[in-house]
View 1 (spheres, rainbow, N blue to C red):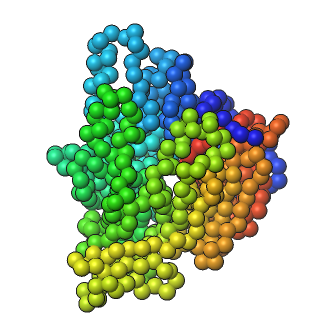
View 2: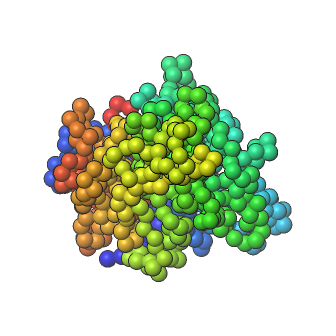
View 3: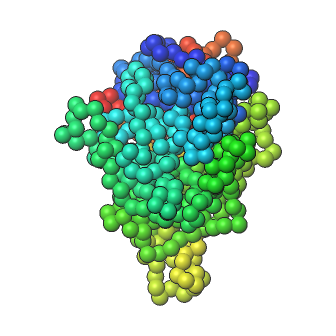
Length: 522
């Protein structure tokens, strides 16, 4: 059975005890938050793109083998403005909103000016971020919304621009063992320069305990990387981090700032100002976390589009990083709601499936090496880094598998060498009907899937004091279109990938984006 992705989903703010089948391990104590678009039409108006829908947050709270479920709309300024007008009045990346034709000239003029230098949406429907002791719903604009992680109530609106000059910010930060968060944002034409800013938000300090101050007020800039072109910064969705380095991919998938400024006037959406330039190279920036400086060696590879990093680690003078890469930009277009309606099963001829790619960067280029020599000295990967005339290294990846997306690892070993990755199978379409556990050493894949079920991104939760990397459980929320059944949260054993239990939430679940697990006590 097909599922309608353009249908508004009802919120369920009151806590509901889910019906458990099988058994959920008693050590699993904490809350899985999930985020994604949930409202696609307001009054007579509809969003054009699935990513644009207004955020609906979900909470699955695990305690002593039981699960409490609730969901709530993010009460963003965007949500309030749209609901008050009973139509979509705030533009999103794939949907340009125009004033009611009956409005007067002044309203139209103000709307036009707001779109020339865009004041972006605060509809944080992509993920959750933890800064200090606070949790935020986030998209990729300069606005994030603080939320109560228990009740899912919306709290303060926070503007990155008040703390550091970034117009856009990544929704996939990294965290270290001390609770510091690391992220990257784009500063557009700030003091005549466009640059990428890598920053650290320190863990909550004793002096800020009990005060209602955003952790961002203590932000530290680690490094700034100049953009290779002033008015066309690269789009990115994630980055890599090891113990000593940050990995930023400057890909030839670019936002044209001048086109964005005139998009409203031209009657097109901002997404149309994203351009893939397949004739250009992809630059790989390796930044020392301690000094904030880029390493001397310059790395590049062919054109590609990356949304998700898997993990990165250091090994014997190399930085290894794994990513999910596409050869074109067709993925975004597949999520226009008109396409989803035409193509409920999502078998699209234009779909180009992604590859799980491994790159190896020799940290120091051997000055004595001959031009044409491969400087990667690791035996377990075929990834290469060939020296070129100016000393630059042309990097080629090893493809570990294909048709795999939304990758998650045991985050306890983030930045260290990993073996197992959990993700969605997107072999035939971007809409996944199976999830899998991938072994990067044997290249074996173990699957879970059921008829008429669509699982979300799988999230691995390690067992406290676990004995191995895969000792834990995998959580995925599942859309279930079998007659007479409801959505459920599935708990799989991390080692065997067999079902331990599931909890039916007595309400339809919907396709979402990303999840964040908060262990009990945090």
